[in-house]
Length: 501
Ligand code: NAD
Image 1 (cartoon, rainbow, N blue to C red):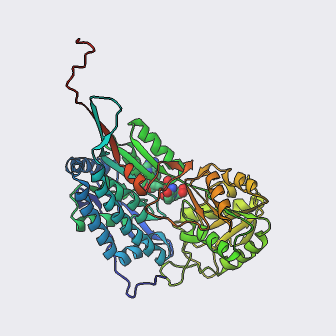
Image 2: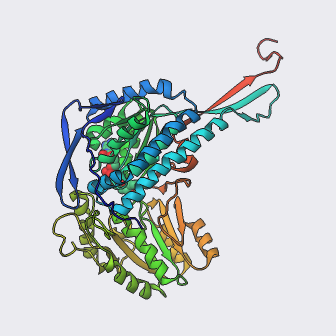
Image 3: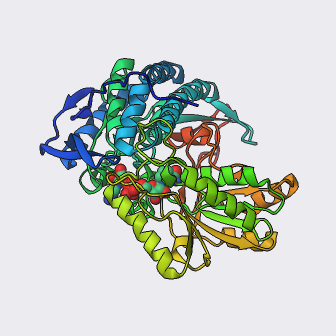
């Protein structure tokens, strides 16, 4: 288990934009407050980029692409590994910033930063492998022709990320984009801009050429929309909500830009009657309370077999009440505040909706006693839930679990798949054959067996249906930033002989 760093690092909070290797003031001079969600206090201000800054950043990325786009994977891998090393060296400082900005418990933030460094190292390896895959010979099945395939970087990538894993969601895009030879303009969420700016500092420390990575803090409408709309951007990679994803896709369509979307979810967790109660409760809680439930793949719908339900729910109520809610900086905290006032009100609104719809609170649903400041909420579990209820169908994005029971496998699957989303799903049973069968039948891009949430850089990440388009991570993540080119050579000495006989 991680512990708090013995002496708190003193982070330097940046307040400028990072464009073309320089820290610059935003053209319109605007500022945005940075709020600590555990105290509700504004502790910093960052620059608010507007369309003019987007123009500058895209121009810098375009200019840098002329050189960066021609480097080999092996050359780029050197920079990626240097970035990984720099992140690792500053791990506790970056994790602390994430706690102040997002609210998550420090050990979770440290885990995020470790994953960021691991992601850069992983894509360094893939950049090198890419060199080996270049000019792959193609069997064309025709005499006189020789075919080959090569992979070229897509150009300038616009990367728009949310607030739940600020530095990590950016890593999932920046690392493969750089590995592929693309140049980037990164736009973090206005709620959590701090660690995104640190990518600028990390790039400087790694000696990344100016313009290869640019960072613009700003709001969605003022900075995100002009980036999505910009004709100089070749590829858009977006993680966030469905309504914004639709806007981004619409903007991409105007210029026929490549687009990948990682959107929301309402993922089911099916627990069969032969599951071990202790293990089930542990993973159910990890699936919905980790990171305050602000996880796109959170298993926020529990489907538990009616025979085991009384025991699972009794243990779940008891264990959820033991979770320490508090400031993410405090040792032992397992549930921090929600990220913002807006998100807090949204989640509280869903608790009212659930009660009005006739669901019953098994536990939670209120601000914990003694925590009068900060966006804190008790771990919350709803029972007496019906499949038409909004708390069962809509993404809440908070520590709120909705529970239904089922009688057999077919019913469980029908309930699990009855969703507009298809990001993730989990199944727990002692019968592995059943787990495999159910995994195949679940309409989701990610299926966990006998666990929920563990995520690996090597494995594809993304969803079916409203949960998005495309996959990040693994080799699929690299492909997002590559164009495929075929080169076909006519090598026969014979004349073609169609017009000229
Ligand atoms: P959001 O859609 O409000 O914002 C995401 C990003 O888009 C932010 O940077 C925001 O500033 C920007 N943005 C807003 N309006 C824009 C516009 N018109 N054009 C371009 N950019 C714009 O989402 P959020 O509240 O930050 O994040 C929560 C959502 O993200 C949840 O729905 C969650 O499920 C989803 N999410 C998905 C994944 C995944 O991998 N599938 C991962 C994390 C979060």
